[in-house]
Image 1 (cartoon, rainbow, N blue to C red):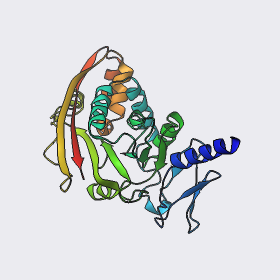
Image 2 (spheres, helix red, strand yellow; image 1 turned 180 degrees about the horizontal axis):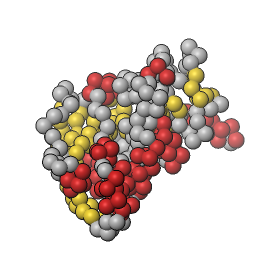
Image 3 (tube, rainbow, N blue to C red; image 1 turned 45 degrees about the horizontal axis):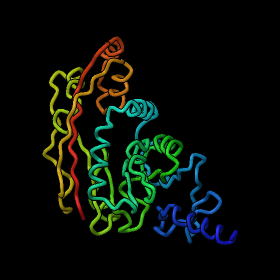
Length: 282
């Protein structure tokens, strides 16, 4: 009986073990004693938070690529308040309608894992990849039922045809690489800003604020299955929430010190959340 229990435990461990490829030679990585190693003896240590860094120094374009620590902290605080939960709910509805809920899923450009972990079921494996080490640290520490790694989306450390579902939320959309890791019949769900997304916030920063350009779609070979627009007002009565929202956006760098001080004393503020969700199939 004890032997059966150990066999079952070993089988479960094999089932739940992450399946990564070596970023240097594309051979399978095996995890032993908290070190991932391939047959060519390239090794990558598992961090104490549980993630693995699969971004070799020669693949980096800067010392610390991706979002900086202040952006990470601001985004985590903002998302924890639930302002984007309607977006998650819409994503999960599509996943439950079209997805294979017991097959591997990848969140490409996962950030702190906010969207990743909410796709976890009792039987699937959820992977999150981001180029920013600080975000992956937070994700791995908070959501230990998912697999997180530091890596580049242009060269994912996964085998061909491995995933049945791939999400890309406000991250670079690389059709060729995403198509490679998707299995036949698998789905890619992209989330991009629609015309009015955060428009009221942009008006505070730019004299002539423009709407988002939604005419460009980076996907040309996958089949578009569904396209939906999700829009709703976000009402803030806490200046910290507005400042966190600003800090997690790319136009935060354009905000003047005067505007920052103005927002600190703001009692109420409203702006639009406006998303486009496109579901593609391979």
